[in-house]
Image (cartoon, rainbow, N blue to C red; front, side, top):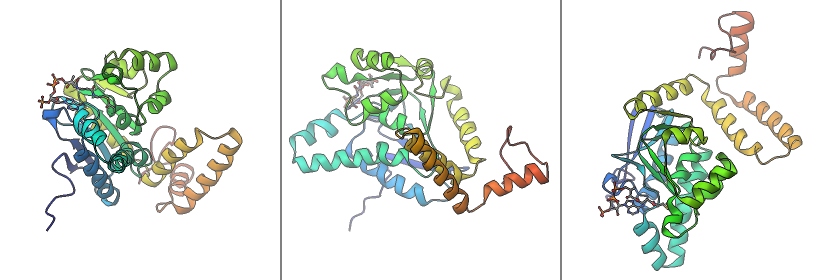
Length: 276
Ligand code: ACO
């Protein structure tokens, strides 16, 4: 019998008070992304999608690293020497968890960057909805240092969040920067001393958990789609998406919000969420 667990060897999951703490767990290899992490992360995302206790996902790393990027040996050297189809499958599975699924994941996702963050780890970082870094974390597009371009989808995701001068500077120099600089560059939302990282992340997750989860999902999905649309198409799409969201929202949030503000005068939507 196949006694392998879907995850637990390279990725751990702990759910506490609505937050699913998903930890890349190869600290001795600085959480470099090997096929084990790839396949376990896909299984974790499947499971978190249907687990009602997991309301917000936090992705982080064990030990000193968030992630040292793709594993040079297990993700590059070995697959490069193997059958091309196997390499293609691995790359497809990696794209699936690192951005295709993460970007559109039905629940909010936060990257909690605790330490080293290189190369392929930028894909995960940018595909998460929000990011909190430790001031002490060290980021780098180190691909140039070992003679490759930032591929996978790294260059594309960096181009989405950084300005051109900054993106090309870090792509071409491979220079590292810390959490505070990552905040200035727009790569993370918040940077705090490492000692406060977990508490600050919990606070952010709690803010998200006060909101209507169905509408949160629609809001992030709409954001990613409209970026590539014309103004006219975006207007039509957003109207349709908004109507569909109101129609399908299980808690009919818009009706509750309107009632609490207009009739009960029990809250002010400019300043807080309606009471759920
Ligand atoms: N791939 C494979 N193994 C790695 C990786 C990686 N990306 N990163 C670290 N490791 C391994 C090391 O080979 C070493 O293994 P060993 O103990 O069996 O010798 C172990 O992790 C610890 O690494 P050290 O270099 O000893 O750790 P240190 O704390 O001194 O440095 C650092 C950490 C800066 C992250 C360093 O390991 C490093 O530069 N890693 C590579 C970062 C990188 O360029 N990533 C690839 C980006 S490109 C891409 O992702 C497409």
